[in-house]
Image (cartoon, rainbow, N blue to C red; front, side, top):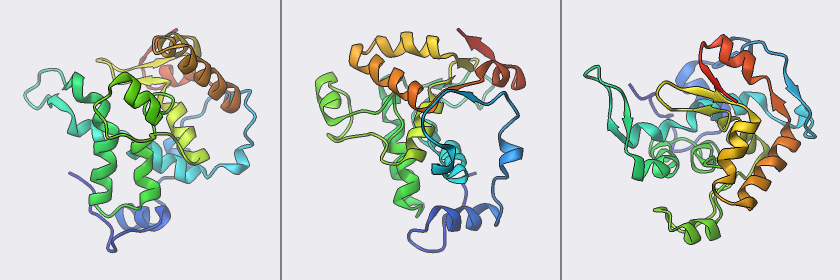
Length: 205
């Protein structure tokens, strides 16, 4: 069932999380399994609010529930509505706002698709989205957007290596591939192999 909305029209991330889940909503040690960490990267971790990243990580894909073709309730495989799947970000964003979630949190849903969608890209590709820029506006949003690229909601789900997503990014043009490589240089390479083993998921290399 959806989590209840906050008591006021909008609330900062920590207040909203406390309203829904209690004061210490997501202990990092309970939510992030141990790995060998991240190799490389230029962004100092001290500049990033890890608690906010975890909240954004949990909520950014909430709109996928609004683009289902088949919900799997009858035991059949879950299916997404392919042509409308790209709308899951904007639909999740609007749903979160409707629940009273603060704009700064709802933007995690809006601004995580691909390596960020600019207005120019939306118009050039003829995407079924309102004209606008759908790009991260904070380090935390950019962190979630990048981390999202290492996981696929395929059936069954899987993790992707940097090389695997580089090939995927290249399908949308050299600029898209370049932006992905710049993200990797900025944030480093996570230990996705350990994560795949931890969650018993496939790894696409």
